[in-house]
Amino acid sequence: MGLFPALAANMLQMVGVGPFLTIPLILAAMGGPQALAGWVLGAVISACDGLVWAELGAAMPGTGGSYEYLQQAFGPRGLGRLMGFLFLWQVMLSAPITAASGGLGFADYARYLFPGMSAWEHRLVAVAVCAAATVLLYRNIRSISTISTVLWIGLMLAMGIIVWGGATHFHPAMAFTFPRGAFHLSGAFFTGLGTATLLAMYDYSGYFTVCLIGGEVKNPARTIPRAVLYSIAILAVLYVAMSLSVIGVVPWQEAAKSQAVMSVFMERLYGAKAASAMTVLILWVAFASVFCVLLGYTRVPYAAAAEGKFFRVFARVHPKEHFPSFSVLFMGVLSAAACFFTLEQLIKELIILQILTWFAAQCVAVVLIRKLRKEIRRPFSMPLYPIPVLAALGGWLYILIASEQQYVWAGLAMVVVGTGAYLWRARRLREWPFGERSQLD
Image (tube, rainbow, N blue to C red):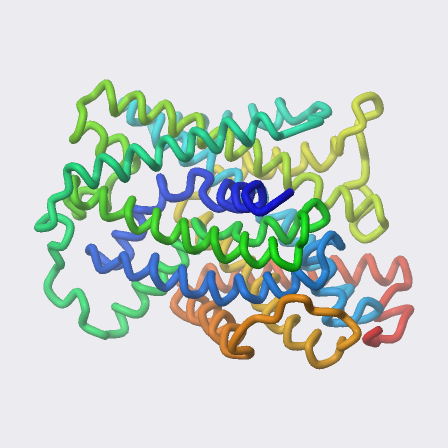
C-alpha cells in the first residue's frame, strides 16, 4: 500500500457519514457561524495528535497498532498489559457505538423521504440498519476492496456536489450573520467551543487508520506520517467548505435544527428531486459506513482473543465459514441496542471513552518510549517535540473539562468496569499483577 491507497483508507474511515450528521449539532453547540472554530480547533488537535501517531506508527509498523504501542510504552510484562486490554475493551464498546450513530444517521435522512415517520419507527429503522449489516457480515467476507471503493466514490461525489453547490450559490451575508456576543470570551463560549470541538473530532477520528494496518504499508517511515497529516489537512479544508456551503444557503438558525440538513440544502438549490437523490446517496453512505465499521472492528477483539490476549469467547469462529461469529453477533446486537440513545449522546460518549482509554494514554506513551525504550528505532521524529504532545494532551483534557459531566462519569465507569474485567481475567490466568512483576523490557 503506497501513499495514495493509505491516504484513501484514512479519509474513508474519517469521513464515513459523520459530516452529514454533525454540522447541525456543531452549529447548535455555539449558536451561530462562530461554531466553525470547532472545526479549526479540531484540526489543530488532530494534527498534534497525528504527529504522536506518526512517530509511533513509523517506529512500530505492523505490530498491532495501539495495542502494541501501549504495551511497549507501559511495559509488556506489567502495566502495559492493562493498558493494552483497556484498548481492546474500548474497541469492544466504541465500535457498536460508532455503528449505531451511522444507523441513527440513516434513520434521520430516511425521515426526509418519509416525513410521517414516528419516533419509534425512527428507532426501528436505525435498529434494522444495524441488524441488516450484521446479517450481511455473518459470512466469510474475503475482501472489502469493492465495498470500500464504492463507498469512497459515494462520499467524494456527495461532498463534491455540496461544496460546488455552495460555492456557486454562496450568500456571505447569510453565512456570516453572527448573533450578538458571539465572540464574547465567557464560560459559555468556551463550553460551547469544547462541545463543538468534541463533535468535530468525531469527524476527524480515523486519521490513525493507516497505523492500524502498518504491516501493509510500503516504506512506513515515510508513508505513515504523510498519510496521517495529509488526510487531516485535506478534510479540514473540506469540512469547513461544507459547513460554509450549508450556512451560505440555509440560514444557520434553520440548519442547526435540521436532522437532514444536506437534503434541505439540495432542495433549496435544485428542488425536491435533487434533494431526494442526495438523500438516497447519503443513505447508501450511511449503511455502507455501518457495514465497514462492524467488518473492521469485529476482527480486533477476535485477533487478540485468538492470541490469548482477550476473552477467549471472542476467538470463536463459524464452524464452516471460519469468520469470527461471536464477535460479529456481539457487536451487531450491541449496536442495535445503542440505537435507543440519541445521536448526540452516542457521539459524546464515544469520544470521551476513547480519550480516557486510548488517546490521552498514547500521548503519554510516546514520551515513555522516548525516555525508557531507546532501543526502539524511531525513523520519524515529530518536529518541536514535546510541544505537539503537550498540545494534543491539552486538547483532550480541554474537551473532557468542557463536556457535560454525565458523559465523563459514564466514561470513567466504563474504564473502572474494564479494569475490573482485566483484573478478574489476570487473576484466573496468574498474569500481572498476580503472577508477574511489573517491568519495562
